Length: 244
Image (cartoon, rainbow, N blue to C red; front, side, top):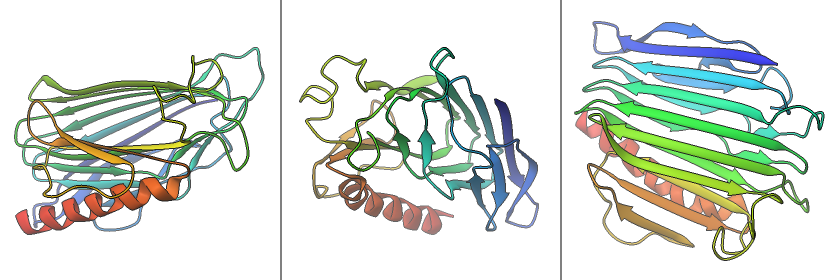
């Protein structure tokens, strides 16, 4: 299966945001659920081996967009002879534009082989919050193979670059060098200032070589990751509202 979705947000001329483009193909179906909020609806199971999904996001100067999903993305095995499933995300955030990416977790079901490649370009003066959570397998299940590659650029310079490989094909994926023996990991990258005080739980915060910071949390399940990172997302939302 191949599917392409595109969302383009721009100012409506009255202090709000309008969606100039809202296009999707199953299983990538974007639906507007609020003045500046889009939810991705899965119109089919997967992704499965052989699937190729592509999402393009564009936020014009002065616009605000928040993208969520109605459910977790479950990477499934599919036919063994097919290539890995692939999800490509390309986002651009213009000057004085705001993008918040807050989907539900990606779950690596047993036997899956999945790749997610993310590229985000933020113009100088743009605002970004990018959240990704990964759960290694369903309940009491060994995970499949997942590889994620994320690049975020600010003012044409790399702000964040991270690759992660987990699953039976990754050497010592369950060891301390990868997830420290845990089964869930979450990352949050934002161009906002570094928050005061420490995070709770198995989490760490570090400034980036540019505006913003990276927060990473791990846990035996996704609840621990959410407990550490959700407050940061809420705090960034509050600060963005005040700034606006």
